[in-house]
Figure 1: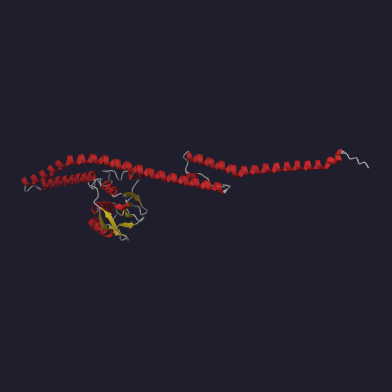
Figure 2: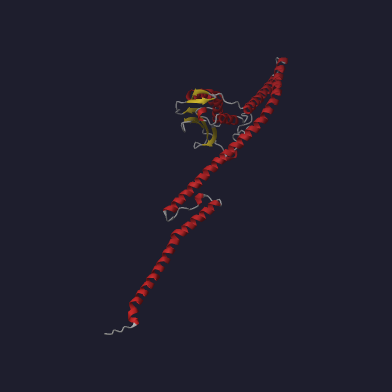
Length: 333
């Protein structure tokens, strides 16, 4: 028996398989192209946008003006975005700390140079001032019954010489910056004694000073020098306050090693023009004759000698918070 088949009949099934495979390949290619395009839209474009945001941030654009988190397609990219924000936060914190350190270094250098100059000037002025005071006594001795106008002139001369002498004394104290003599003392007792010292000034201006709840702790430092700082800050607060204003003294413990003392007034605050000058020697916003401009400079030097910090900030009451942060003792420096 002989069976004869055409080649076309034998290859027909294979031909259909080849066509099917080709059609499947074309469909797979089309699906791949579609998926690739979707992937480009979902992955590549957000990554490109994220990269563009990084470049804009590097060029100085503010981070809050950039949208780096919208439509990030994967957990890995979202983690990358979080890492980027952590990096920027760290950079901003480091920059702020660097600026503060540079400002403090500049302030210390300024105080040191002015202190050296002030010491020389103070010593040179002391002798002429003492001579003026001696001459006023001689004039009074030579004229035991001067007429009222002459007596007024002599008294004015003496008062001006004494005022100049007080300024010179402040200059010498500023230049001297005696290191603190550490002793242990009770914080509440020390604060109450300080408030008694400024009570006449507060009464003069009809201002009330309120000591808020204070923790019972001991502080190690130079009691007299620190009291001088508190008196300076309280008198400044009193002199900028209105009648019947309340000045608050608050004490907190920011951590186990430091104490924070805040003198808060409701005065006029600090404007931007004077913010960078408030600790400069001889800078004062008071009227002529009411201050030498050395109180805050001397106070800053005392606090720095105690390894602490002194800052002045505007508060929500419209006035100023004078903030002292001190270590509780030398072992906590």
